[in-house]
Length: 128
Image (cartoon, rainbow, N blue to C red; front, side, top):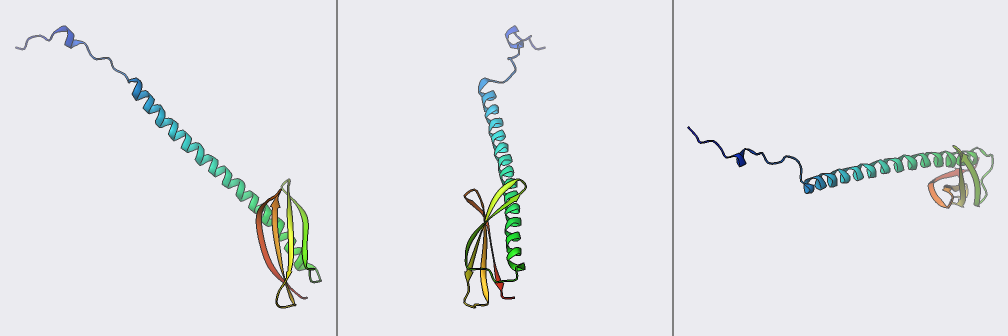
């Protein structure tokens, strides 16, 4: 038969987490939350950029279609055309340049939001 254990050994050690363990866990949670926040911000920025590109493409294509549908060759030079899409005021800069063949002209449509360029599309227009 074993002798009974002394009273001191019957006492259990206090259970719980130390301050260091709690701080490490909080640090890990904080890092995970910051990473999630950055991923969400990147997705939001990408969605906004995609929306801007779509609106800019609509504006540029509209101006290039106007040039193609006109019954005369566009004059060489630059022109600014305002374009409002989805309550956004964009600006389309049309640049018409000559080509080596006089029957064709190069037309560039560049769309700006304030002063930042969003999109550039080019085409060639021929004599009708």
